[in-house]
Length: 210
Image (cartoon, rainbow, N blue to C red; front, side):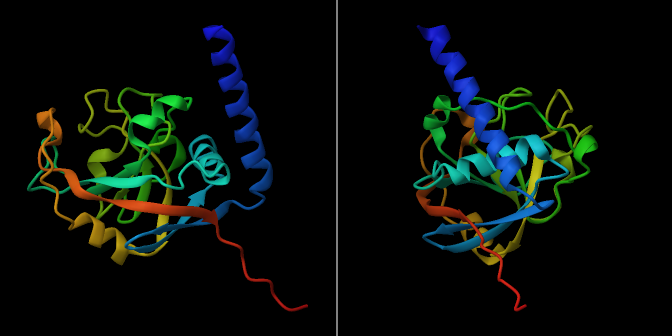
């Protein structure tokens, strides 16, 4: 039974990714992430990062990110990794275990580097990303392929960028983050009041007059 359930989840994920690709008739698709701090508009790189961007778009189209949160902020003063970085992280947290993981698309393959406003997938080992993502504040080359932030030097899978709403990103980044944690790696990084992601939808392009 457990094996059949895994197969069904894998098939469902494959179908959702195919559907996302089919609907993404442009190289870039914009989505609006409405939070309690304001809206963040993100441009997904469907052509350059097809696996990662399609996975994220399937989460958007399925309504899975509605009710998610931004729950972590990292900056040099509270970073417990090296080299230090500046990002905010969001997603479904423990609920992410219900979702299949996706193959790891490295930045040397996609050409999407971790610049200011880049959106990328959080991960443990390569190929473990599913629903957790982060947004860069400032350029973060330590997160690219070949850098030493991860011992495997495979970097993170970037798949989009913020095109509007970096003021909201920075407001979240500056939120108080002294929530007690069991893992010292996250000490000083977990928001005292997680920022709710109320809804995430595709941005409907304006229709031009004939």
